Picture 1 (cartoon, rainbow, N blue to C red):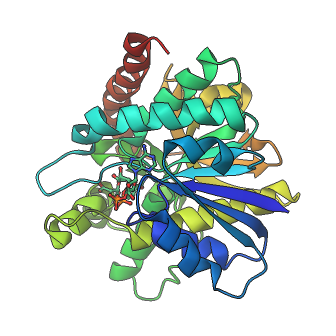
Picture 2 (picture 1 turned 180 degrees about the vertical axis):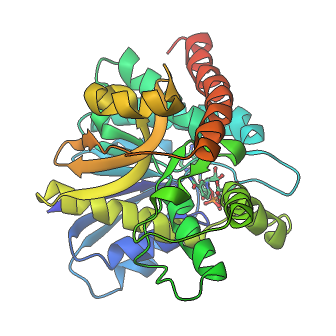
Length: 329
Ligand SMILES: NC(=O)c1ccc[n+]([C@@H]2O[C@H](COP(=O)([O-])OP(=O)(O)OC[C@H]3O[C@@H](n4cnc5c(N)ncnc54)[C@H](O)[C@@H]3O)[C@@H](O)[C@H]2O)c1
Ligand SMILES: O=C(O)C[C@H](O)C(=O)O
């Protein structure tokens, strides 16, 4: 029995994510919320012959009903990039959207596990955290920025240059954050192990860091990744559900390092320093973060990349925190 709400369910990510979660046999209640078009999406998806119930919640006055009794909230609400924009350029619109949605979560389902997709993730997750702290319901184990797309891309891009690799079975930890240089793939930690030349490492790292731009350019003004993101978010949600039912699952995500201070020591020593949030491999459990999984060792190239990422991340995190302070939530 797992109930999942999607906030922003009628959008480019929200629609295919609704489809994929309707097909997940472990989801028993699918609550779809948006400011527009959600009745049509919900009616459509509800005809798929799986056993879950589907609810449509249109507009802000129905947000409380969308969230009441929910176990997992996934948030793809917000505007996407156009060519020439950075994710940080979305801050002015998406920061307010995430703040409003986090306030409603604090009021209506404070114990839910939250997965934030809305960009810039490096700032929107700290915003959600500050809102939950201000309302006295913050649990760092339960708040995630969804960075699964970076991991999905990493394994697929490796397969593009190493055709003998099984992309679906390859696991490459991606740490740091979710924008440009803050995305740090640890190719040396690939499982199963893959041999790369230094040139391959540099090219792959750059492609994984800027993979989102490939889609933004190709869509030429019509948005950013939606289908691959829906796949990645469905995979993340499935991992959460498996963890809630007692399985040990490791997924990467952008989390507060306070969620597991002991586990975080290793990642801080690798270059995360005193940052509050960092993308790390997370062992999931019933409560959300069970443990921050250790990263055994990294190369000097990866350590340098983490240093660069950390400088940028500090600014992104502070921007989110000061937004909530200025807004006096
Ligand atoms: N984390 C990632 O890896 C990742 C990947 C892809 C996209 N994204 C981000 O996801 C977000 C959504 O992208 P998209 O392509 O689905 O955009 P979209 O414009 O197609 O859809 C966004 C949806 O959010 C809805 N919305 C806006 N304000 C809302 C509010 N206050 N409450 C509820 N719904 C609201 C809109 O009505 C729309 O249906 C963007 O910010 C994008 O940058 C993140
Ligand atoms: O690139 C974007 O703006 C969307 C998303 O963050 C992505 O990585 O595809």
